[in-house]
Length: 183
Length: 160
Image (cartoon, rainbow over the protein chains, first blue to last red):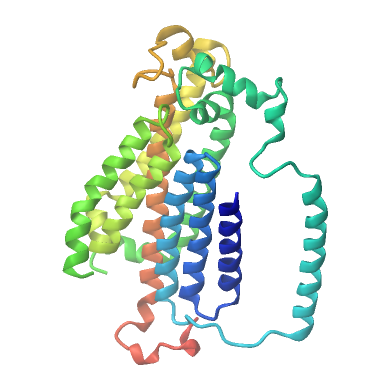
């Protein structure tokens, strides 16, 4: 359990550095550190599927972000913060933190889901009958491709739409490059 | 990139690609699945793109083929759902497991339509992420063009 808090503190520190640092490349690397911390957390919570997806997406995103940042002209952020905005953000953060502390008292223990205590909960039915219902040994796969395949269809649609949008927006400026192999 | 990066990535790219295929094929038995495997497949091409450049990758996997693979994956996944409607009576029902091909638990051929869906999603995710990164790389080359050949002009005042 102590490892969780070490990881959490590490991720919080990395997030603060990512926001506060002036160096854009350092900021991107801190974002990557947050992602890897999250991946380790999923692994410790015995969710290897999510940990694997998290780590590969993190690596890919980090590569894209690093390529995007180091090619820009402006890699250092300059300029000071204004006083009123800083005070307002500190007050809002304090309020959110106090509300979070109040909510944390009512939550169950970390890593101990409420649904594990209810025998008639859906998650318990998935664990008990997943193999006999779907024949897949990996219960995670049997949930997202059998019990809840609608979710996966929606997710695939979102990805498809995102790709269409990204290529449609970026194509206009990069069409010349794409069609000319010499450039 | 340097000779070291090129040599190492030409060795490693096959292993990464093979690992992606393994993650997709065994998604119903071990941790992993279509999405993670597809991202790994795309990242093997990203490695090639970083080491050898965009034109090499374009020659290896043309953009038109990638967009066809993307559409094929989405189409096959939807087709599996509609086949469930035709053969099993419900959209997305696992008709292969329930009636035609039960298979042995923990064997590679098991789970009915689940491995097929995994393959479709893997192809779809891999191709679409490849397309996104490819387009971003082309976009970056485009936006860098004005400062090429005159590095002294690079500065905050020069951006658009």
